[in-house]
Image (cartoon, rainbow, N blue to C red; front, side, top):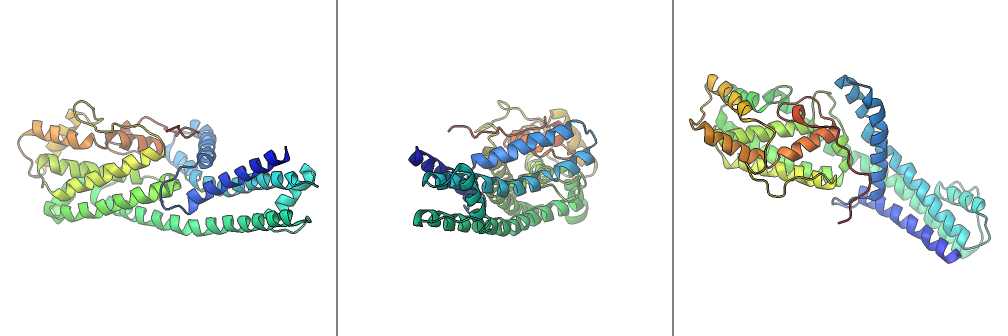
Length: 356
């Protein structure tokens, strides 16, 4: 019985340590069941007050606390589980009641020195638990600057997009402003900038998944809405030849790959190899024609074959349509054109990781 309890306690400590390492240290997307439970349960708690609030700004103000609170809850959750695991090990080596074992575990974890125990095995456990407690705090402290650095890089591009594409950003407005101010040929440099941004987004928002829920400083801004506007703008230029460049195609590919990696992390389904018209898109032909007419009225050169332009646009949009709407619903994105205005939400990840 004592041997079984010892290994159960050791297993609990190791699984908690794995959760911390996968969150703070491992430089790749590693999903933790414990993290999924903490953030999943917290999200379901947040849905209670959100159910009674209809004003978007008030809902945004509530959701702004979701990810920071979730991060702060990870540390006490880890401490609690580590203390339980070590208490089981202290009890299993003999000489202590369950109450005494837990008091010794808490004293060791927080390096209080209020309780002590004799014997080499107990002292080794005490020293290891004290070291583990300090390591967890140090990891959290070092983790936050990395996260806010990635957040700052993301939001800088989102804020700059408002100058070029309006608020909420739209593909039509972006193309019109470039046509009036910069010239459409300069778009290719912008596609390169966002291709790099999407690559950084894929890495940071899967390794640091809490970033997905960090909301922009301005309630009307969103990294998901901005991404959708950029991808739609690139799809428009490729479909209508205004102008058609390889940089736009690479930007779209970087964008839909980033969306798919993030959706993979949260177990949201999407077509593995989407093809239009077999896989539909949420933008209608009438909406596309309306956008084309606005561009033509402003003197933007559009190829005359609108049927082929629609097929080309849908062929690009189908690669990111479903993942875009899923991320809009997941993040409770603000009103956006051809994105959150047709997303069905809220979309909440399952509490348990699916079996592969």
